[in-house]
Length: 284
Image (cartoon, rainbow, N blue to C red; front, side, top):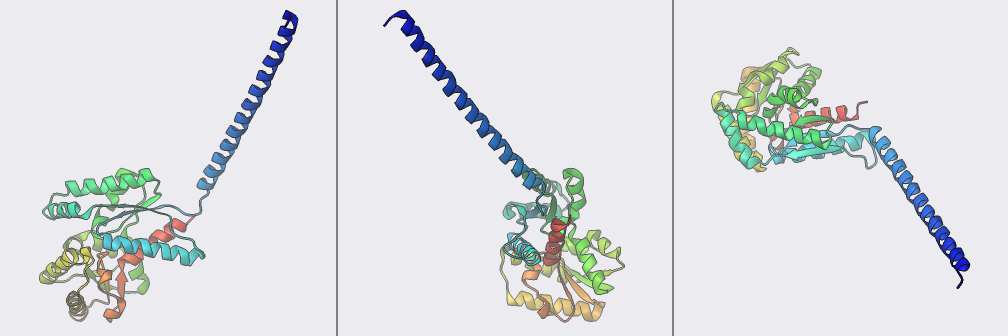
């Protein structure tokens, strides 16, 4: 082969390489553009999502956290229809260790328990929660602190409950819950803003209620004897203290006491809190 022919072949081969490379580059650019468009669509869909993400601090205890999850999903389904459900992010605290922290808090040292709750709230924020509900009446005493430290709205369970009691037109209600919830002012202060008076069980009854909550209900154990004991306390508060209704101020108590068990209106704080969360989640 002479040198002229060799030069012609070389030029043809070089031209083919340039053409193939150009096609590959164009295809790559098209793929990148398509990917960019898809990312844009996903981002736009996310920005325009119809509901807010509910962040739940759960596991305190898991028995009531199950009810929160069930109720919220049923409520969204009933409101939006079809197969719609709640958009939920839950962090479930390991209750065995946490119960030890609660006992320390009961003795006045809230440091570890507060740190655990703040850590849970931060995890929810990092995960994309738009707001937080604490699936525990007692721990809602930390709601204001969480809002301040984490920077997300926290729907206070006592505020939601106070509104329901006010709507019923009641002036005096009994409050059942952990000893801390019954004895400390954080709950009754929220109710007092609506002119609602709170009566609580006597010391012996408070000790009994607290024991049933931690020894039975937190482990999802439901005993008839305990149900009868709670009904007796509610009946006494109605007759002797003038209670017109009863707040089940521990998210585990609704596992034990239902409306059909007593003659006065029952305020199930688990259901009330779940409803408030769903309303906020669906609001524009």
